[in-house]
Amino acid sequence: MVSDRIPQRDFARKLRREPSKAEALLWRALRNRQVEGFKFVRQEPVGPYVVDFLCRSEKLVIEIDGATHGEAGDIAKDAARTARLEANGYRVIRFENADVYEGMDWVIARIVRELRAG
Image 1 (tube, rainbow, N blue to C red):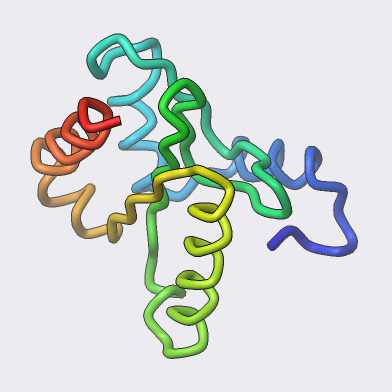
Image 2 (cartoon, rainbow, N blue to C red):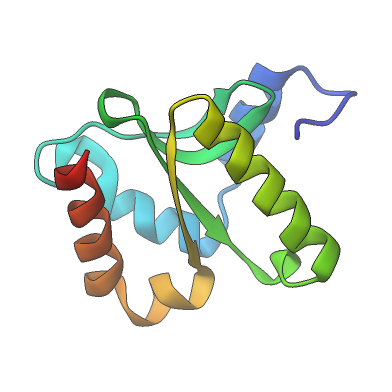
């Protein structure tokens, strides 16, 4: 969820200015309709959350999980976040940083499958 101290839009802007390495790499592949002509935005507010990437037309959320998502409490928070987004009609797919670094072709293929399944 968004920090209580920072308004959501400002928080999203901060995240756009300071992407993780994995987010920056994936953004290079998603931006400018490079994937099947679908438009993606990054660090977009959706309900109480700021999602890493969003294809609005397909209601597809892509989340990149770094090392901070490996603890039991974080996994539970991610599951609750995913459940809430899905309850609001979004499809959510998650990748780990290593997926992006080591298997970008696989990541893009998985995204394309989800877009086509839409």
